[in-house]
Amino acid sequence: MELQAQEILNISQNYTICVSFAVLFAGIFDHSIDIIVFTSSRSFRMKQSAFYLTAESFVNSIHLLVFFTSRIAINGFNNDLTQRSIVWCKLRQSFGTSFTLKSLSIVCFAAIDQYLSTRFNPFLKQLSTLKLARRLTCGAVIVWIAHGIPFIVIMKSLPVYGCATYYDGFNIYVTYIYYLILSGLLPIVIMSIFATLVYINVRRIV
Image (cartoon, rainbow, N blue to C red; front, top):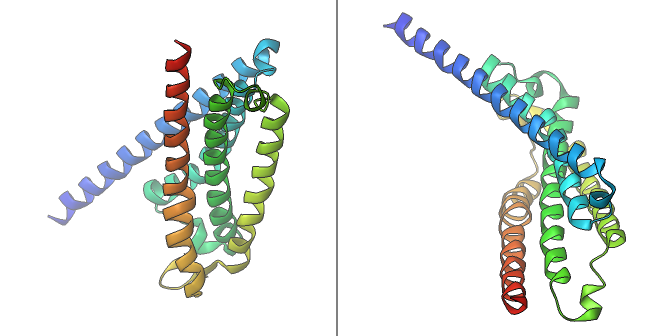
């Protein structure tokens, strides 16, 4: 019975490893193609929509390499580096949160840009520029890197809980502000609102 359970566990781990690597390589390949396509042509490089897609693909590629490989090591090889390295414990949490928020911010900026570019109002339409797209993206990168600094300072490798923190206030922030609002409701609301507005604008044009 124990041997059968061990065989099932081995099959499950091998399946996890194969699927995880397939998802990782497919994601990296897909994002790499997007980056090559949108940076190889000058007509694409001068469009803010292509800039947002390129920036998002770049951010997501790094996120996959840093965060997903760590998850493969944990689930597939039972090798949790956060338990053995306090530096990786801190950096993994910081990178994970900052890159997630960078990607979501870029998607929201792209949705807002689509709304501006489809407006009849000349003032709003002229705000849809590549210069503004670059500034917003750079601003988001700076803000979310700063947002990740407290994770580097506060996170610890605890005996029972693993990579976590003793600070209840910080745990409340992560649970209700980061997960629920910043990476949950807020981007969903922003994208939904501006997607609806873009649809209305396009219907008016047609």
